[in-house]
Image (cartoon, rainbow, N blue to C red; front, side, top):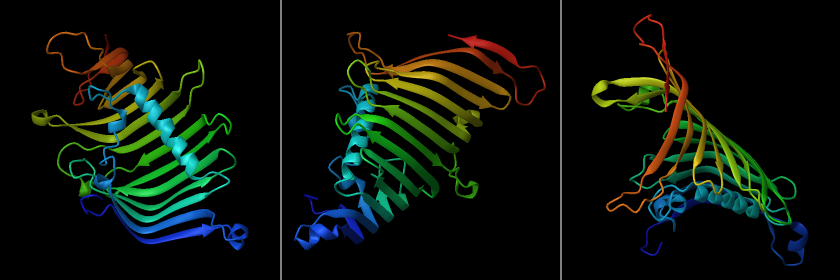
Length: 290
C-alpha cells in the first residue's frame, strides 16, 4: 500500500496458458491458482468496508444500491472467466483478514473455484470457515452475451452452528442458510432479487431478562426502484410461541423536520401469531398486530 503496509502475501501463484498462441510468442492465460495466501482487507482500496457501496448519502443501506451492487459484482465475476480468455480461477488455503473493528476475525478459504460454464455463464463454489464456523457457498450465473444483462442468478450459502464448547458468552447465531435468486432488469422490467434466510438454534441475549432461544425464517423480495425490501414472511419461533410478520423495511423518507435523524421504517403486520408461556400447559393465545 502507499504507507508501506502489506496488502497480500501469496505463497504460490500458478497460471495456465494456451499452447498454440504461446508458440507464436503470445501469452494467453487459461487459469490461475493462488495458494497459501493472506489478504488484509483493510489494506484494500475500499478499506474492507463492503457496505460502503450500499449506503446512501445519509449512511443508510439503500435497497436500490443493493440490487445494483449485486448484479455489478456478478458482472465482474463473469468478465473474469470469459470463454475466450481466462476460464478458471482457484484459491487454496487463503486467509482473508477483516478490519479489526468488524464482527468477524478471520475467513479461511480452504478451496474456492470460479469457472466459466458455456458462453455467458459461470459457476462458483467454496468451502471455507468464518471464525471456525464451516461456510459453504455454491452459485451460478449467466448473462445475455449481447446486452450483458444478468439473466439468471442462483446462490446458496450455509454456515454451520457454532460449537458449544467454543461459543462465547452472550447471544449466538445458530446455523445460517441463505438462498438467493434473481435477474437484472431491462427496459420496463426492474431488477429483482428474492431471498430466503433462516437462523436455526439461535440464542438472543436480552440482557437482564436472560437468554431467549429462537429460530428465525425470512422470505423477502427486492425490486429495484421500490426503495424498500418487501418482507413476504418473517417467522420467529421460541418455545411454544410463534410470531408471524409481513410487510416492508427501507430507509424512512426525510420529512424536513428540524433535527430529524436518518432512520429506517419498519412497516410490519401480524395476522396469525400465537403466544404461549413456555413453562405452562395453558392454551396458546392467538393475536394480530398492526
